[in-house]
Length: 152
Image (tube, rainbow, N blue to C red; front, side, top):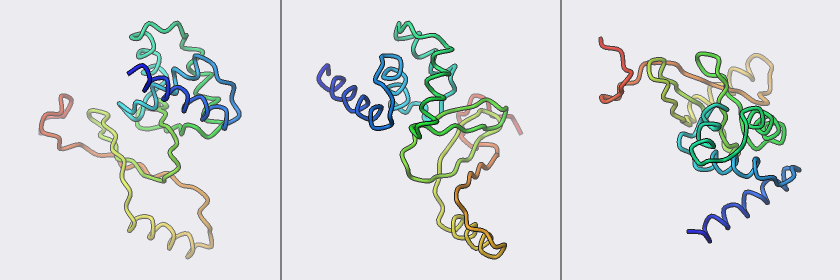
């Protein structure tokens, strides 16, 4: 276990260096939390709570500063879903879109070739070349055991 954590920290450290960032304990810990991927989309406050739970002495201001640095370096992607709170996810390089439950906040990722093709067709028809895009669908999840699902 200790060896796996050491290997993980080493890999994360090299990721920081390749992004042009100095390897520091706060950066490593925050990157480690994001890499755990549960949940995949986390706010700065969520990360801060996880740091507190693991007795790390890293302040909320540091979390915000590190996330901003990670975003500028291309390590994370910032999203503004319903409610305006920013959430972050590790940038794995592969494009995906999101669907968000407006009742419980659950976020699912998806890739749909038909949607991607349609967007390209629309862009071509209107004389554009897409350089980037973000698609967020909002709805009501049908998860039967969702604790926040509205009764219908």
